[in-house]
Image (tube, rainbow, N blue to C red; front, side, top):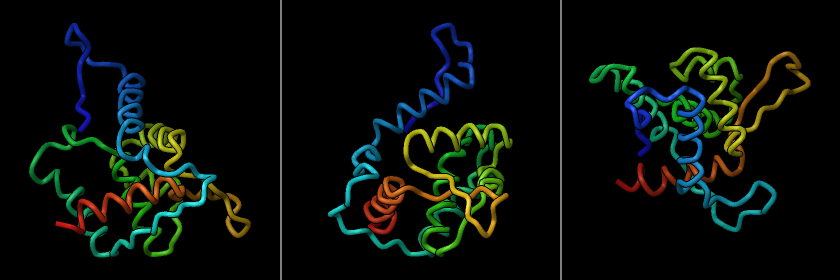
Length: 157
């Protein structure tokens, strides 16, 4: 688990450096074992129950009932959970909705969205029916990583 770490003098790291460290940590995580977007996956896609995703989202949101919210800031996780739930429910998520559910300011959410996109976990799209709305969805890499997580961690316990 990545922890916020001050610099050697004990001063808080600038936001950009903190985001970079977290992104590097994500890149080193098991997510990097997912196949590149261009490769056809020979792995079976793990089924994820809508109920399991809903339970994890509710637990993620309820954490602030126990600890101060500023200690639990992980907007990328909230975004990924929302996108997995949308995938399971076969619905689209606008970038503005995704920013809202991240539980951080819009500018911070947009920065995290760019990190997730840069790491290849999400893609942004527009559709002819809604040319003024940007939608976000999990990439094949992101979907595979989250489904593997739910299969191995959430639904196996």
